[in-house]
Image 1 (cartoon, rainbow, N blue to C red):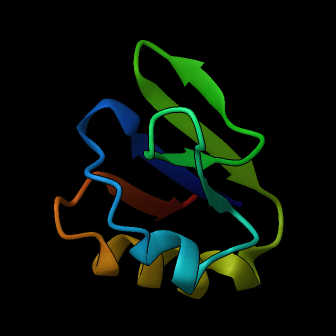
Image 2 (image 1 turned 30 degrees about the vertical axis):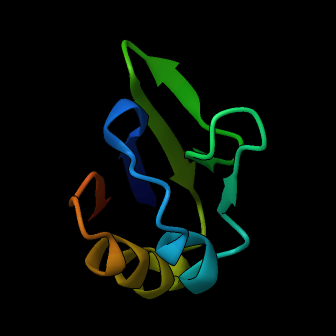
Length: 76
């Protein structure tokens, strides 16, 4: 299982994560920050659990593309 975490309040709205992993990230029209789709919010940390381990590489690329390093991924 892949776990992706986004610290949304620190997002600068660069859109790189959306370009790399559009299946998991979208830009909000309200505030211009990224949204981790289908994620649970826990005190500003949005977490998504993905059952398909093959998605790890895509999510890691999105994390590496983020200039403020607010996306983390791990395999559990």
